[in-house]
Length: 441
Image (cartoon, rainbow, N blue to C red; front, side):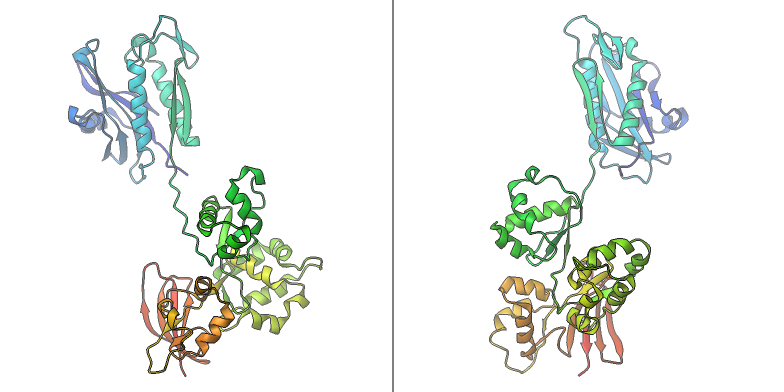
């Protein structure tokens, strides 16, 4: 939602009384007494004409672009005016600044434009002859407040407006909205559609048409590129575009060796997501599972328990639950989060495994197993087996160093055993969301 404009005021330099508020909608937001204390910044010296100016005063933020039009037809040979937007003092006005400058340009154009003939023009449905200018002509003075009211109402309600002024000029204004750049899509990222309805297939660009059929919530980006026969950088750009418009969401690769843990949003399963969850995780062609069984599976997810362990313990198929869809739904709805494994090289006197020596640069605690597997083109089980046999590398399946993601975005170094967990060091590290554990031998 864009910030709301509190008021729009038009001030000008009167040839006898000096700077004054000529019109203001709504009235008396900025009183005459208050205006007199800041008028030097609203109608400034010539050096500041045509420049955006923001005045923080009187509990408001006033954004304007003062204009001076020189012509011998005006008193003192110039028309000096400033149409300002008034906001609350704590409002971010950066998106409105181009609008203020563009509106000043429009008013200048309307004022200096002369009619090519003496036929009447229609402004807001009224006949008006634009022979002498919109701002200075006596006949137009009643139309200016109407114009300002329309601008205020339409920009606050819709963030844009198109207002005809005469037969040949229409004022088009639009408040831009800042949209953050989506994060880059990585090779091991898995896209999943989060909208039930997307635009018809033929309306997408050719790359998106080729990629969409392979977005199923299980294929990583690198596999989609191969299956769709599209260069991977084009696939990443396509997915980033879909991410920008909230058509897809990025989730981790599904592996039976993955570990998950519940988040604080698990309570939503009993309040808002009951029916949707039961329908989503059910095995196709079977009767619907019980919500109690779904909750049991979710709450059993914790550090040290893989999806394979969960399946062996509870047999989800016997409960009419598809474990892949269960994990997928939980991650998309933020009911659970994955505990990633980040291998790290620990110095020792042991001889390194020659098969892993070339990967040591990736074993720095910053690259997860999913990413490494995609980079080197091997399966996760094979990589974990190699890590298990190399005494210099530690990961989540070994007894020493374990590196897992954290929900809080902090960096923890600690020890873990079957009965005791001791925090050794707590360090806040910006943009790093990992835990580093040490498990006693």
